[in-house]
Image 1 (cartoon, rainbow, N blue to C red):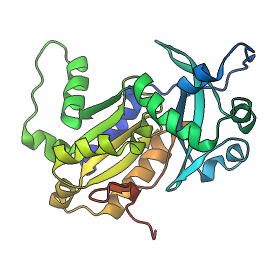
Image 2 (image 1 turned 135 degrees about the vertical axis):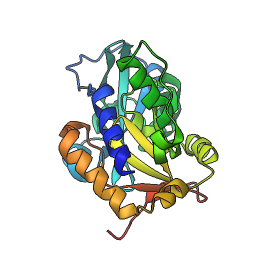
Image 3 (image 1 turned 120 degrees about the horizontal axis):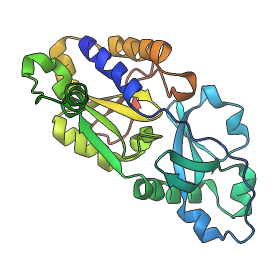
Image 4 (image 1 turned 90 degrees about the horizontal axis):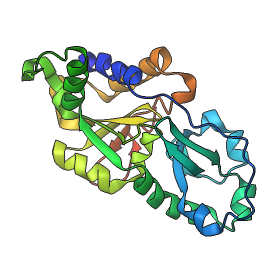
Length: 247
C-alpha cells in the first residue's frame, strides 16, 4: 500500500476536478414535478465541513458524511450543470427527503452509470498514455498489492464517490476481491476499494491506511474536492461502516 500511495495521488491529477457549481438559475414556471423528479441526483459531502449548508437543504446522514441532492439540467463534455436542492425547492415540488432519496438514487445510476476499474487497468492505461509507442505489461512484482485494488466512480468521474450508496455495486467488487473491502475516499469523485485480504498480506494496518488517506488529502486534494479522512469497511453485513469507529 505504501507504493500505491503514489498511484492514488496520480489519480487526483488525472481525474477531472470540476466541481458542480450552484448556478444562478431562473426557475421555469413550466417545469413540471415529473421532470424535476427524474433529474434529481445524489451527492455526498462531509458533514462537519458543511454544517452551514446542511441547515438549508434536505439531507440524510451516512457515517461521517451526508447525502444531499442536486437537480441536473445539463450534462455535457465539460461536466454537469445543476442546482442544489434546497428546502424551499423541495417544498415547491412537494418532495420529502425520502422521495428525494429514492428518486435520486435511481436517477444517479441511470444518468451517470457506475464504472469499476482495477488499479492494474488504470495504471496500464496511464502508462500507455505516457508511452504510447509500446505495449505496457506489468508483472506481479511490479504491481505488488495493487492487484487487490479497484477504482470506483462513474463514467464522467464527477461526484463518483456516491458509489458508496450502492450495495449491489460493492457486492460486485467483493466477489472480484473474494474478500471484505476497505473503502478509501480518494476524493468526492472516486473511491479506492482495497481487498482486506490483500492488505493483510502486506502487513499494513488500517491505521496506517487512514494516515495515508489523511496525508494525500492534505497534500494533494483541493479542499473543495475532499470527502473524508476516514476509511470505510464493507463486507458480510452489506453496510458501509467506519473501519475504525473509535478513532
